[in-house]
Length: 154
Image (cartoon, one colour):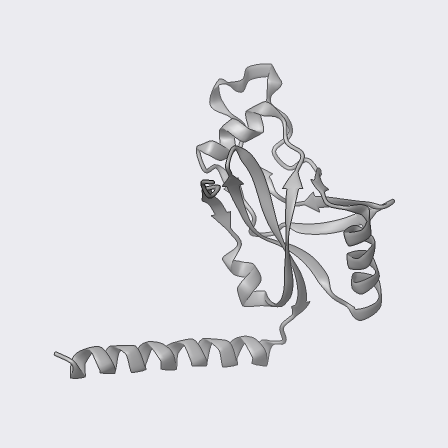
């Protein structure tokens, strides 16, 4: 049995900077044909995207998929709200967590899994400014250590 290949379309690096990612989930996403063709060209922006639960369904808001050039009248609104595909039980659990404990649902990445488009959804808690500074200092220190080790091993 062969493994299913995954090809990353876009990642939301800003989410990792602004939030602590507690859990992540793989969801399907409801798209039209020209949107999928635009995704194959890599023309998507997840930077300001977020998810909401409305009447037992989960939706992604603020995700920009650029219109497909050859799409003419079949192109949809680039900023339209798109439905995510998850089990009702999972959606209700996420909804309860978001409502009670102050978490947010943030899209982390978009990728092809075989021929299907999947979205990695993160259950995230917001970082304070001092948390962001600490993370940047830690990354900088790690980079300096790597650089020093590389110099020493020459």
